[in-house]
Amino acid sequence: MAPDIGRRLRRGATSGAVVAAAVAALAASQAPEAIQPTTDNSGGDRAVGAGDTAPPSGVGSATGDSPYYTELPPLKTPNKPGKPGTSVNLPVIMGPAEAGIPASVLSAYKRAEQSIRSTDPGCNLPWQLLAGIGKVESGQARGGRVDANGTTTSPILGPALNGVGFANISDTDGGAYDGDKVHDRAVGPMQFIPSTWATWGQDANGDGKKDPNNIYDAAQAAGLYLCANDRNLALRADLDRAILSYNRSTEYLNTVLSWFEYYKRGTHQVPDGTGVLPVDRSDDRRPGGFPSPTAPFLPAPTSPSPTSPAPKPGAQNPKPAEPSKPGTTKPPTVPTKPPTTDPTPPPTTPAGKVATLAVAANGKLTATTDSDFAKTPRVAALDASGKPVSKVSVRFEIVGATDTRFAGGKTAVTATTTAAGIASSPALRAGEKTGAFTIRATVVGRTLAAADFSVTVTERQADTLVRVGDDPLSAATGTAFDQQVQVKATDKSALAPGVRVTAQIVTSKTAEEASTEGPTFKSTSSRTATLTTATDGTLALKAGDLLAGDKKGTYYLKLTAPGGGTLFVELDVTEPATTPTPEPTGSGTPEATPSPSTSPSPSTSPSSSAAPTASSSSATPKD
Image (cartoon, rainbow, N blue to C red; front, side, top):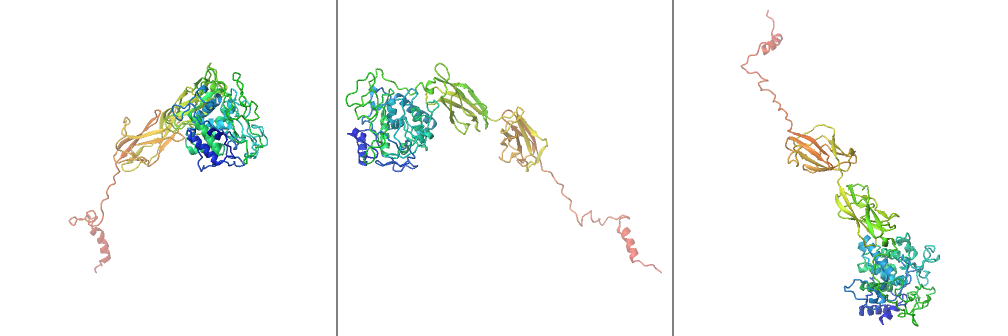
């Protein structure tokens, strides 16, 4: 009964009880679990309950909430793998037809997973999720009806989104993708509406076009869309948000999850055009049970192969007027040689033609710190005969402990090979970290031997250091040198900016180690320091930057630059200058007052100098 329940589910006409019954039946039979979404999906991806209709605008979903298949996978899992949660690749004879995925479609899903895991590993995109969406959206591109390049043999179009039972989305592409200049329609095997494709469309098969009807382009775009907003699809909440952003319906979420889990338990490859089509789409009735006025898209039927027996009465009608009933599709004839799974793209795609990715130029790259590399990695994509392959996506990735980056600060970039088969990475700039590392080039979506480039970043160099000026440098102990030291650095006679110069205080020009006494650098309070030349190639120690220390003597400022530049500047540390002590002065000193026993000379005695004055002033003549 459970399969019938699954096939009768309808969006807009299904009660919550029916959904719950289907979920319970699936769970009881150990079928893939169909789990309700989280109750609050922040960021605009709130679930639409069973029976609800999408908002008229259709904004916020990849498909415009357009119709989808509602058939659930069979209750028995295919080819129970030895390890739960892993997929296997088995010939169709070893598993149920529903588990088969057409070769090109399967290749596109796996290629999209590999590409996105290399550029956004945190998303954890599984290809089985793309397969689940592709199953419910288009029946895996109408059972794999695609050409050698992965393009559907005829366009896959959903009904006009005219607001009658669906979202109402006016034309956004002038009919370029969907042929409708009035309303938009969902397009291609992953059913993108044109406005969403304009943002997310990809050229994954390298043919120069972003075609929503190409399974490689559509699968890559769907994967990127699901990974948007930094989602981690290994987390259940983010997984639900991603699926609901594709089509906002709880029933859609449950249907995709059931196929997702089904494919995770095991699947196998079948030839293109032989995939089993699901039946019952969600667009054949409106709420209330009335037929939809807009004819739904009906996938082209699978015609019996020439070796297949004629269909029995009641089997699938070859005319596309009406889908067949469940259980009436004639399975394809089992091939005499079971097909094998090839995870690589078809040989007709550019990446599929590549047999070798080789280093074309610049296998060893060098640069100095904080500068641009003069050259960048170049690779050649060659086919088995050694001819170049154009339009191949090549990923260049920096591997190792380094702060070197591609333009824009990126550690990984993608380039496309030219007509000569050559791909070059963007400009590369060294950071401040020295050392060796690797740049690895790989073909996107292929497992081929990588082309590795050896990269080395070295210190900036100066082969000559010259002092500007020759004033002697001298200071007394306990003070600072009040003279400036200015030095010019050059490398091969050119000014050398950004060079890290080692400065030491040494006791002689032959000393290998810094002195344990004498002057010190004020900035480090030690006898060693690192100085960097300015943009004009000069460096300077200002007055006061060197302290004399407390022991006199002759010392040297030794400057050493990568590249061999060396300079010694003599430093003379002296004792402080001594000042004579002045003799005391005043009365009572021998110099100021003559000794009483000393007789004054006639010329200096008071009687010889003062007596005449006294005599003239006090004596009177006698009569």
